[in-house]
Image (cartoon, rainbow, N blue to C red; front, side):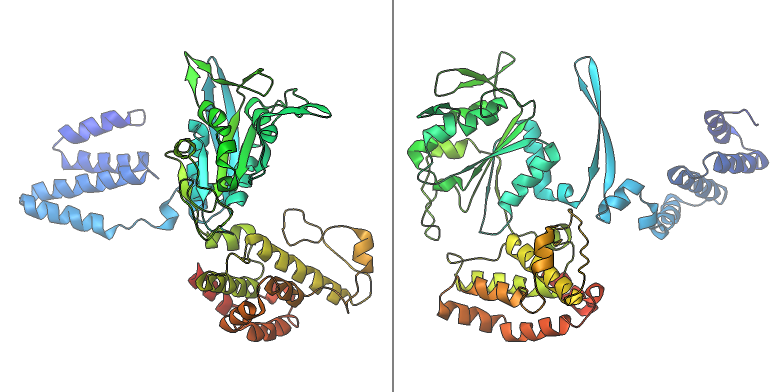
Length: 445
């Protein structure tokens, strides 16, 4: 029986009535399918059905036996594929893709981490493949611009940003003559993958129209051609656009995304600088307009890298209080502020630890809270006058009126938090996160 195939084994098992042969075949099948969970279950079910037949069990009894067998088996984390385990654990996982283009095949390998597997990033990356323009809108500090940078990092393309406002001109968008000669526009450069001098970059480009609702509606009309053409083909040929000189610009690898605080075709009283845009501009983003809200889990784990809980907890409360009181037109808690406070605290602790002696700073560029390796500054900053996180927060509160600041400080128990800070200053840096604080962050998330 050594050289018999699995199919032959199954055929014999189906046809023989000899119980000895059936037992031998079942043992052989189990050995052949060792490690194959599905096959093992099928063999067990076959045995159950066989025993039911020998005992003259009716159909209902057979179903009961099968159902009980299935219900006793639970899928656990250990049963999952390693790739699925890594995704569920937010651990980086490597994916290889074979991309066929004509007669050639490209093999692409990418490490997927939490920044890429976020649902909103997956949506936008799908739009990149579909050549859809994307418009992200939401309150201040929700990470819209940060998301654009994530897309650029994933694509490994250049990024050109247009900071939209009422003074944004056609010159900036599609180019024109200046006293120094012709200047190419940012939209043209992104569309055609061009350098400032008009020569090819050899790389794709993300065009970010930041704060698009603030652009003058008459100027916004200039964008419509590029927004419409970036995903179009005519008779199999990619669409082209013209610059201010009338030159035909062939489309390169270009993805256009825009951000704003509100929908394009609305006038939001909370954002006085916004214009109500024409429906034609809104239509350029039809099907790919997403409202972005704060992703607290990614904020804490993916950006702040879980450093440090007492800072994140307070700033989260402060952010919510600002929103509840309607003070966002004055200032708001952004991820940049959170990073700034963290970095300030890290420098404060390292300088204090040195206490005037030789300072030992470890530089890790991937960590947002790592000090800059500027030797003269590292040597010169003194432990008695180094900036504190109270300095950072007091400066932030100064952006509000005194009455507003008092309301926010009372609502978030600012004095109580400063007492916590003083206690944290006495603790080792690797012991700052307590189980109670981590549990509170879970509740916040």
